[in-house]
Structure formats: C-alpha cells, structure tokens
Length: 335
Image (tube, rainbow, N blue to C red; front, side):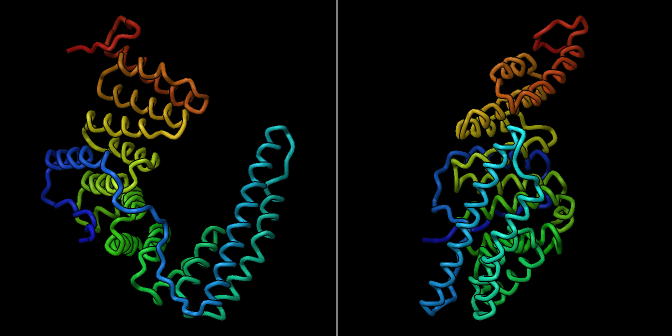
C-alpha cells in the first residue's frame, strides 16, 4: 500500500478567500474520517540484537513505569490531603520524587555506558530525562540516538519538540516534517507540528515565506490530519476548533462545525460544557447574540462558570450596543 504523504504546504500566492475556502473544505472533509493506522506514540527501530541486553533494557523501562505510577499515586493522595488542610509541602514531595527516580536514572546511565551504540537506549533514557525536566540531557541523548538510527521518526519528533523550545527553531520545523515523512500515519506528529507552527507563527512565516494567516491555515491542515487519524481524540478536536479564532474574518460556520464535532467526542461533562462556552462565543462573535445567550444556559459545571460569567458580560455589552434601550435577551442588531 502506498504510504500517505505529509500535508502539502499552502502556496505563497494563495489569497485570503482561497485560503479560507481550502481550510473549510479540508476541515469539513476530514473531521469524520476513520483512522487509517493504529495510534502509536513512539515507534522505535530496535538496535539491540543481544536478547539478554534487550531484556535488561525492558526491565529498566518497566522500573521507570512503576516509579511513575507510584509517583502519580503520591500526587493524587497528597492533593486530596491538601484539600483537607494537611498533606506534604511541595519541597517534600519533590524530594521524595527525586529519590524515587534516582535508582532508575542510575540504571539507565549504566546501561547506556555499557551499550553506547544502542539507539533505543538513548531514546528512552532521553525521554526519562525530559520527564525529569533535564531538557539538555534529553537533547544530548536524542541527538546520539539520531546519529545511530537516522530513520527513526520518534527521534525526529522528540528533537523537534526540544528545538521548538530551545532552538534552532528552523531545525524544529525540518524535523517535524521529517517525522511525518517517515511515519505519515502517526497523528501525534501532525498535532505536535501544528502546535509548534501556531506558537512560533512569526518564525514560521519567515521560514516558509507565508503570511501569519497562511501559517494558521497550515496549522489547521496539520490539526485536521491529526484528527483524521485519531478521530475520537478530544484534545485534537479542541485544538483544531480553537485555531479558527485566529482567522480573520472568523469563518463562523466552519468554527461551529469544528466545535460541534468536539462536542460529539467530549470525554465527560466538563469537556462538553467547555465546548458549550466556545459555541456561545462563536455565535456571539458572529452577532447571533440570542443564540449565544441560550447556548450558555447549558453551562452549569463549576470549572466553566468563570468563562461563562466573562462571556455573559461581553454579551451584555454587545446587546447594549445593538439596542440602545438595552432590551434584555435580544439577538437583534441594527441594520
């Protein structure tokens, strides 16, 4: 089967109307497509041929996972105690976490020292260091892994994420594209690349020779590819819908369609009510004030009340501007 290609860049000559048409078309056509490949976060080309060494590394990874699971339990329990006015201090928790992971760190260090030519060992050790906020150490390990296994998309993805934060930024764009080229059916790579372009939009505009609006369009294409490949991922759907706010003018119908899709795959009531707020916001921005106010009636969850209150204030101001006599709950606007 022919592998999928990475999404094409938006041409520099694309005008704003054509860009909007392309975005709406591609978004509408990809929101409901089924995934074409299983979701895997980090495919790795194993470099260890010695069975005993491979088994040893697997034990270290299992120990890493066990330590993380235990730490997660500590954090949950301590948060519950804090709500009751007790619990350990942040400094004490951090000390316990560092002590819990130190034996795992030593095992990784020892293994990499004895197996310097193993790409997977450098990759997983780098991930361990990155999780411990040792970004420079992670970068060193991943660069060593890439030198040993230059066809591994997971290494390009990891390094691209690191370069997007610490530079060189241009190399981040190159490496995200390379990860997608090597594994075009991996949704996370598209999502990570879209995040990077959105946050670094000014640098991306210079690098690709695009306008800021075209960079947003490029991000939308990447987000839509991620969602196409993982259509039940709420975070992907939310980020796609969120990006429409950056387009000028706001494509109301496309934005509402994207938020409605996110609503359909919300994981819980908090997700769904978050989407209700955004649906109301889009309707408000489109001048559909009564619909926006009605939409907000569905928001009752505590986590969304602050956003609801702020949006209601904004609605009231717009209603005053639309109706000088300040008629409540009116969605009408002056011609």
